[in-house]
Amino acid sequence: MSHKFKLGQNVRQLGISYGGNKGTLLHGFYKVVRLMPDDGSGEPCYRIKSVDGERAAREDELTLVS
Image (cartoon, rainbow, N blue to C red; front, side, top):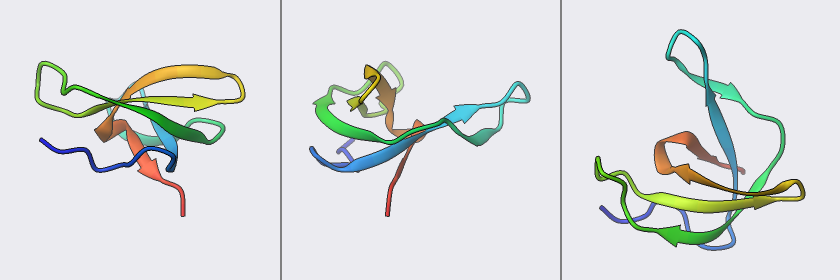
């Protein structure tokens, strides 16, 4: 699967509520700093960075900041 987001794009990470529904926005913006290989399920992954640090995220957890 190819990556939806590109290096340098600004994204938000979606949280997962206890009911299993995605959609709760976590605080802050992130910048895509690295495209990573797909995970075991075939989902593209990224390294994203904010002023608070860097983390890994799956593509289905991210939304583009417009």
